[in-house]
Length: 320
Image (tube, rainbow, N blue to C red; front, side, top):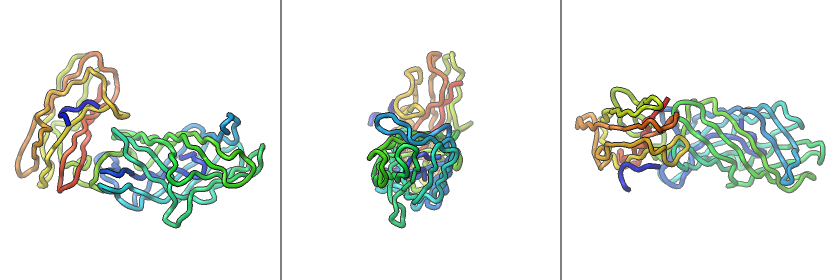
């Protein structure tokens, strides 16, 4: 991460993907510029195959289809995660008969960029996720993932489908299978689309990307690969509510620092400047890109205070 001011079908045995936001600090879940609150339905489908494998490498089960649907039960906030119940969990085209016994719940912890870590929780009804696999080698076995156990990572996006990469240890609850196994697979979030996680405490809503700011003439920096270019956007308030911008950072799509070829030249726009439609405050954002920057989508991450809450806005930087 390069700071401009110092300062996203869940093939998890026993769990699947209900997308929720989690962090002990400010967190948020968004689809594009729309904050997602309690009652949001999330649907994901298996992309490719998912496998259940013993620690010695023996494959117990492989599925090539499936879907999971869940609903968030809260909106999150400055000191809580967003949690939810899994409402439907299906497995299709599996090499062994595979059935969901109880669906459980999940939560996502904001990490960096647009991404989060997914962990297992019990549902509001007190049930953990459990799945039975009738294996050829060991017979019928029930697997679960312990509450608090890591399921995988959610890679978010402001422009396309989020992806949920599962790499979880499943614990045997009954049967003669090994006491634990590794469940690995990737699911594509089909709704909402796009979907991303932010360190935003607005709890769903509140302007573009949570922070009430807008850019003109458009909402992205667009560059051609292989050329040295400098482009500018105008930053201004998008509501009567005052927004005090406290920091800005250039980020790669998966978090961390972008290529060295990107160089922001507008530090003053993030130096505790207050914006609102009433104040009429504007600032010119100028970004220099060199011919060495590879193709990709990067982000300008702006953070500020709005109504006593920390909120975020992401501006796309597209090199194509």
